[in-house]
Every structure is written in structure tokens, then in C-alpha cells.
Length: 195
Image 1 (cartoon, rainbow, N blue to C red):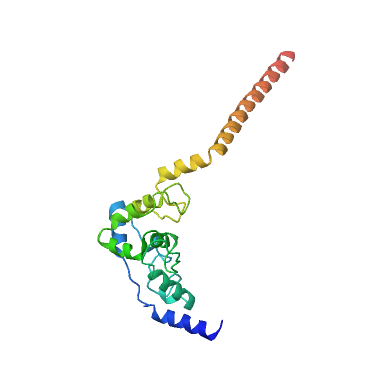
Image 2: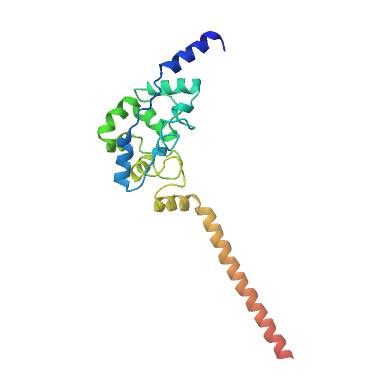
């Protein structure tokens, strides 16, 4: 890297404010509407949020990550390909889908975020749309976290062939074992009558 590029990175990093802007309104809405305890891990890389010195927090970022953070914070309109190092895949998905400007506007009505996110998006491929997981207070990036009934239905459909084969093998095994035991009993009776 040449000195000019290094200088640009340092200037970009210096221009990014190191204070995180938290949006607890979304967390409070999800907790109230879902009845679940929700932490910052729904949208952030660190479950304690963006402030601090741990992994995924602002105080832990290097110069390149600070530059990415600055680009993500300036993604005011939807459709921009940015990856904020303090957000997880769902948090970045929100900013890409609706833009930072609209997201900040939604602070006064966090329920409307569900109306603006793509209804068919399922980041963790668990069969539950991200919008539903947002409203349910489950993690849209954890395929083991979701409404138990919806997870069961998705897993049942996904594994239907394996379930059918296992059921058929079990039925055949029980049928075969029954016939084998019946054969042993018949052989034992024949032997008893011969003695």
C-alpha cells in the first residue's frame, strides 16, 4: 500500500465518530411485542451492542473496519452494498434493504420496519421469514432460534424423504422381526411335539 492510500485510510478512520448511535427503540418494541428478552445480537455483531472494546464493537475495530463503518453509516439510501463491522448479517440486511435514512426515521414507529423488509428474506434458511423473526423476537441469523412449531414444520418438510425411509425401514424391520419370532415359536413347537 502506498503512503497516499494509507493517509486516506487514516483520514477516513479519523472522520468516523467513535461514539455509537444506539437505537434502543427497536429492541424495546421487539421485547414488548414478542414477550421475549431481546439483546443487541438481533442486529449487532456483539450482543452488548456497538459500544465497547470487544469483538464487533467500535473500540475493537482496526483502520479498515473503521472505514467500512463510515461507508455503512453513509449508506442513506437502500440498495448500497455495505457491510458494517458492528452489525451482523441481519443488521446489514436492514440497511441494504431500506437505507440508513429510513431506518433512523423508523425510530418513532419500529413496528413499521416489518412492513419495509423483504417478506421472502430468510437469512438463516430455517423456513421462517426474517420479518416474522423480527416480530417474534427470535434471531434471524440462527437457524435453531425461531417459533418451535414453524421450525418443526420446516424441518419436517425438508427431511420428509428421510423420515419416510426411516418409517418404512422401521415397519419392515418390525414386520420381519415378528415373522422371525413366529418362525422360532413354530420351530420350537415342532421340536416339542417330536420329543
